[in-house]
Image (cartoon, rainbow, N blue to C red; front, side, top):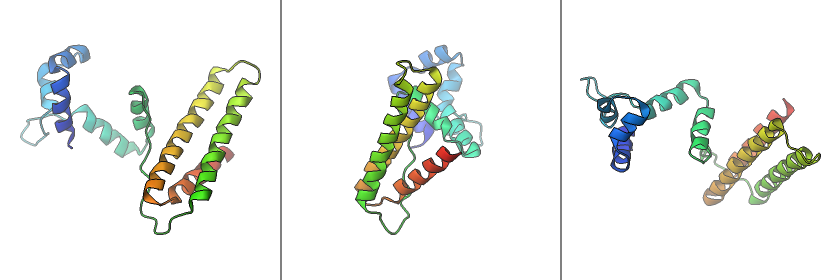
Length: 163
């Protein structure tokens, strides 16, 4: 689905006039977002396309994570499906269990003094987001029978912990 098509559907549920008013933008600009951008001047580059461009240029998925958090969700990259040889499920399961144990350790350490600081809460949140992503990746790998992405994610996490 193209971004302008999605916005057209969104405008069926939320009035472009309301969007215009709340964003402080002209109604004509809001309507142009729902048209394909073209060289003849019709349509306008909409915010969805701009965000996609920003992610592509920066190669920084934190932008998408930030958006997902503001929609009460989280972002997880799709696992790479190009690996020819699947890993066994038991080692992959062990990685998930170990990651969860690591999160519990972070929580226990932070709560040891019966007070969790803002910095500790931030670390807990970051580990939780990583665990959710890894677990979702695990489920996706289970569905496809390919556990290589879990192994790679675990290696990346170990490298970050050593830094």
